[in-house]
Image 1 (cartoon, rainbow, N blue to C red):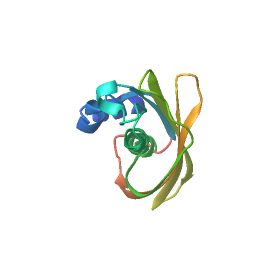
Image 2 (image 1 turned 135 degrees about the vertical axis):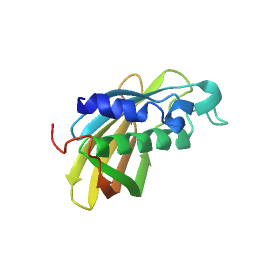
Image 3 (image 1 turned 90 degrees about the vertical axis):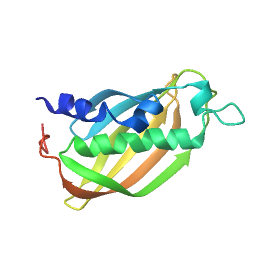
Length: 141
């Protein structure tokens, strides 16, 4: 099976992503793009903006998929979230990721969340700990 199809199949039953309505838009070796259609009843805060926790969750979801895209199973060691702006509870948010360093024991990556107009809403950096190899996905494809 193709690596992208394998990853999509693995994450299709991810309960957390399903509750937040997060969808995989694209996966490539070393990165991914996810989308979260904003549901006013799920993702907004008291001030009618998208909750920072919802944005952090969106960014965190892309990391596992990104690590899987290079054939690795990882867990988060450090997550640094920089909130740049906020968006009202309408439209969708998109997160894209890129591996900066693909090591044997750690992976560093960056994720950017954008609104429908393409404005960067949030920038997130990660250090991921490599726990094991994901044998179904090659390290390079």
